[in-house]
Image (cartoon, rainbow, N blue to C red):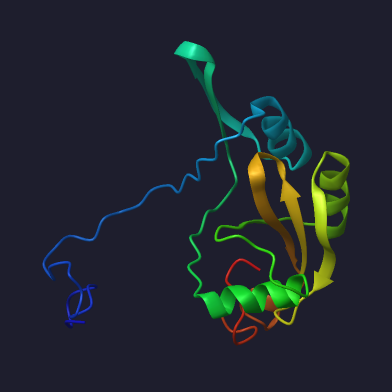
Length: 168
């Protein structure tokens, strides 16, 4: 990188190009059973409804607030490592959605009661979180995770464990 540029020297983006500001990440998921998916994520998981819109031909969308968003990009080896730790075998498709919650065990039980299929029960990970895996409505494979050690307690999110993934 040039000393005054956030763009790496080998990047196809010109060094003098302004860095864009991303204000929000929205993950858009098509759900054949819209009502069931909304009930699961809004009512069972507890994501507050931010907005809802409808259009011609029964077109509907509900925007749910999922708190702070991050985009985690893992290579295939890291994805396999996370699956092995959390589930004991490779199960996740290319996209997995992870939700940080206060109580992973209670949330997992509530989501299973609301129609999710448990893939793996809450499991303590080497990076000090309690993670469960679920197959949820709308064809989503999800992780529910609870941080067991907070960054101000001596183990930071970035240095808790080599090979950990950032969401859990």
